[in-house]
Length: 200
Image (cartoon, rainbow, N blue to C red; front, side, top):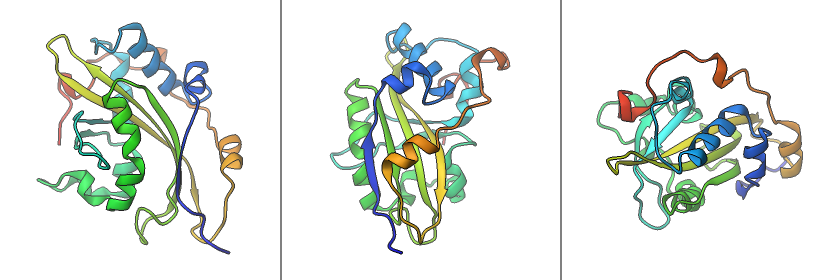
C-alpha cells in the first residue's frame, strides 16, 4: 500500500473554544482571549508548560521561527531527543520541506491570528521518523514590558504505520482524545519560560 501524502489542514477554532480539541488548548485560548494576549502570572499555566514550545516571533517567509523553550512532553522532544544537544537550534533538525509546509501557521500567529491545524507527516520528517497525525495550536503572548513569544501546543493524535493509507476526516473524527489535564488539578507555581523555565 502507498504511503499517505503529508498534509497540513487548517481546523476550526470553534473546536478550541468548546473543548473538543482538549482542555489544555481550551484553557490556553481562554487565557489569551480574556487577557487580550497579555501573559499573566497564572499558576495553572505551569503544568501546561511541559506540553508547550515557545518560539521567537520572527521568521523568514517559508521558514519557522527559532524555538526558545521546548517542553519535555512535546512531540518534538519525543521524536527529536537530540534537540537537547547544547548549542543546537532544534528547528535545524527539521527537513526544509517540512518547515515550509508548516510555516504559514507560525506567520499567521506572528501577525496576531490564532492558528489551529491538523498535520499528517507521512515521510516529511525523515525516513527514520514515524508517520504522525498531530494537531497544533499557536498563539502570540506578550508581557507588560513588550516581550513577545509564540506559544505552540502540539498534540500527537496517532502514530501511523508507515506502510498504510489514511483518510483525513477519519483521523479527525476517530483520534480526538480526552485529556486528564484540567486547570483545577494543577499545582501552584509560576508559568513559562518568561518566569523561569529553562530556555534553550
